[in-house]
Image (cartoon, each protein chain N blue to C red):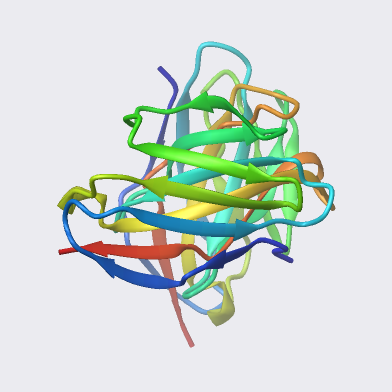
Length: 114
Length: 115
């Protein structure tokens, strides 16, 4: 079945450091890929997505490229801020249209120090 | 930008009891999914409802059931509660967002504790 594997956490960085969070996936077809972020006390928010190979999703300085050859969708940001402290989830969906079940990774906690 | 509201935010039940969790989505969002999230884990898909009918289910027993009402409100019902049901339950509606069509928008969740 489908699965998503994220690097082990937590991750602690100083402000303005470079961020990479690894994500690899297993799927039978050609899934859409997502990064969701969960701030303390809030619901999951979609950060970015990519729907086909070589697509790059980007938002709020974060970006991730859909790499079919390595089945990866690593999240990067050039300069993190304290406000980026949250839990980040990589996810995939093999379905489209109104039927869109997501398979999530375990999530990784990012803490950014001032 | 969440337009999904869940209630209650926290509740405590006893093993064997039944619980109802509620969710309201944005107008026009006709598809709703429910997820169960254990502490330190990613959300797990329970089931999805579209036009008031179940439309896909994950590895969850029939004691997990749902209802969808015409006014964009939804319920998750769990019967015969077990201790392992203690988790965060997330409601997500599917619709058009700034990221495009059929994107899931999640509520903040209802945290259930079973004693």
